[in-house]
Length: 335
Image 1 (tube, rainbow, N blue to C red):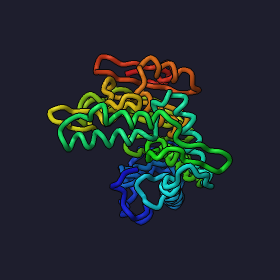
Image 2: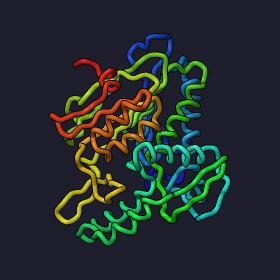
Image 3: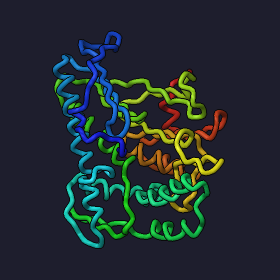
Image 4: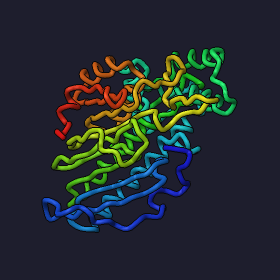
């Protein structure tokens, strides 16, 4: 989700016509592709197999409607979102929806699992680096210290369908929330009779649901060229695939480029890995771990991936230096 998101709902945005480009599907189903811009602040592509155009249209409608519904819950950039309304409180218990409760509860779980490498309060540090880009000098330690102290403390509590915000830090769950939105939107779309396959690509993160595996490619993060061969090709089925990296996003501070990925424990940009890709049974898990693995030491990331059920990771230091776990390797297609 991004500040560039339009005030229009997804369903009101201009849509391009159906593109029928799947070559001879294995059944009587037909292949449909749709492209959108400005969905959760990025591009969205929907591919699906359906028996009729009416079924495909119904699936698309449900998917986009679910995205709109959940954006009003999770968005950090829509002033009236449920998340932003809750964030106006401090040290008070408030009733929250089941969707926001899930996000807050699961975020606490993943903060603990990743030793706070995933941290929804990191925007406070990002703000320091944005200011540094404007004034041309890195933040001073005296600027870091109060923010780091606030980040190390408790942020919120949840119980039943209530939540209490304990910190005055503004929280941002965008990456994790985006994965959750995609998971629930795909679930809704796949409930349409006649829809047998569904692939959603939102800003380069993928979610597949269907009765047969598909092949997907991982772009090379070490170069800005779009025409390079794929770094890796995977076979996935009913899984989410998320990527993260610092090569093309960051802050220019004076004559030095800094990653947009900030370590919540030090306040400093992280640069060791050019790219991180995570494969999991759902997009929310893949998204949250792609963020965490960008921050954690490589061996800690590999150990965490191996300790979780059905999680694969690819950690790219450079063109010749890569790390991956067994679950990832099991999905790689031989060249």
